[in-house]
Structures are given as C-alpha cells and as structure tokens.
Length: 228
Image 1 (cartoon, rainbow, N blue to C red):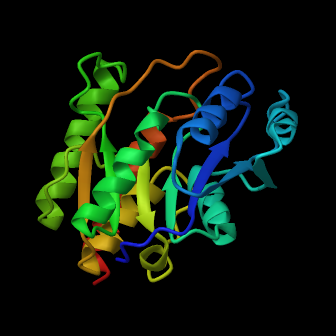
Image 2 (cartoon, rainbow, N blue to C red; image 1 turned 180 degrees about the vertical axis):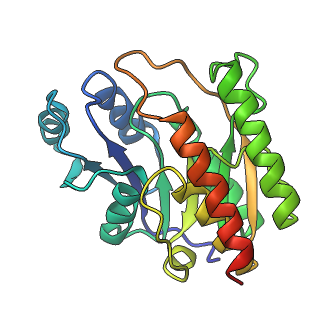
C-alpha cells in the first residue's frame, strides 16, 4: 500500500436518490481535502437523479443499465483513476465527512482496506433487525475467516485500487461487499476499521431486499471456503 495519495476516486451507486444525492456529493466536494474525483454510477433512475448529478458540474455520471449494487460499484471502479477508491452509498445514511479519517487511517496503518464501522454509533439509526442481522453475518464471517471486524456489511470503505485490481469479484448485488472481504483475506491484505456514525434516510425507500441478500451473503461465504 502506497502512502502517497495523488487522487482519490469516490464511487457512488444510485437508483432513484434525487432527494439525497445532492447533499451527499456536495458534502464530499466541499469537505474532502485530498485531490479527488466523484463518480456516480446510476442504474437508470427515473426521478431526476441523473439531472441533479449532471447539474453539479463536478461529478462524473456513468449509466449502468444492468441492475445490482455490486455491478454498479464494479463499473465505477473500472472507470476510477485514483490510487484509492472510496465506495459509499448515495442515500445520505453514511457520514461522508469521515472520508478524510478513513484515508488518514489507511495511510497510517498502510492498510489495503478501511471500513467505516457503524457498530459504535450511539444513535443506532440502522434499526434493530438490521443491527442484529449484521452482527450475525459479521460473527460468521469473522469465525469462518479468522478475521476481527465489527461491521462486515458496511458499504462505506476506502480501498487500494491496486489491491482491488488484483482480485476477481463476480457477485453482482449485495454479496459483493462480503466477497470483497473474502478475496482480500485470502490475499492477506490488511483490513482495518474506523468508528463512524449512521444516519436515518431522509428521502426515498431502502433498496435492500433483506431475505434475498442474506441468502446470497451466506452462500458467498460458503463458496469462499470451498473455492480455495
């Protein structure tokens, strides 16, 4: 992991986030001191999200017609130019002001991946069932892969571009985040966390399909054990 950061690429997947995206990208643009590019990968929104992103003049918009959280992120990462990639949702729930802290942690620890853990958030905006489900998934991952993380399902991460290019990620939806950790663990890449906060969504509805995603995540963990 290089300690020199010439450019940071922020990759944001969106689908009908017109009520949230402007605040998210503006906060990043105005607050991040590292040189950066903001890439919004949109899954054919119909609520004006694309027009809002184009209107900022400082975001790069990529249209990804194939649906899927992981697919959108992979598309954005393929277009990213920075040595470090930040992945974060466009729904305004993650504290994007903490990007600088994540980058500082990555440099200090010479880490390949930094997760923003929501498990220490006193407000517990995640909700009880999501919190418990996350705890169960994280416990299983840590146990199966001898890792010590507190929030494996965090979608707010700083990732070495060199490292992400060195693993083959095939999951197209929510299991993408877990697959990334599995592949990084197998490569002995260093993964660390920072404490972060989580906010309640202001506008729109969550896209998470809990049952479907949970099955896919556990299936991905099992496949990771079988495929050495």
